[in-house]
Image (tube, rainbow, N blue to C red):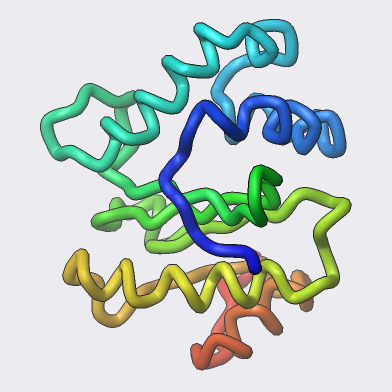
Length: 159
């Protein structure tokens, strides 16, 4: 049964395979490129950075806030990720909100996004996030349904 887990190097091969399914996400999720992603040492550094990002004191790019990244996994299979941003910037109030999620294409339309999103809500609450702001594009019906299925109101951002 899938569950949220802390990022871990044991998911390296599965993470790489997931990125192969949607190459455009490599730069977004990994903050790197396909060539460096396959290097175990680089990947270990990436995992360490994701864990460090939870701390207020960790260095991060301008405009980024502390965040808890969790991976939605089934056994050793990386299925997707949840990002819980500890606070909002003006930009995150417009686009992104407190919680973002991504499910690899081969695992979509199987309830994983809804289940992972629901599993992340208590974690956000433990971080003092209540209520959590979650946004989606007005025309993103799938995301709106996921958010609503988790008990949220329907007020997608426009634009």
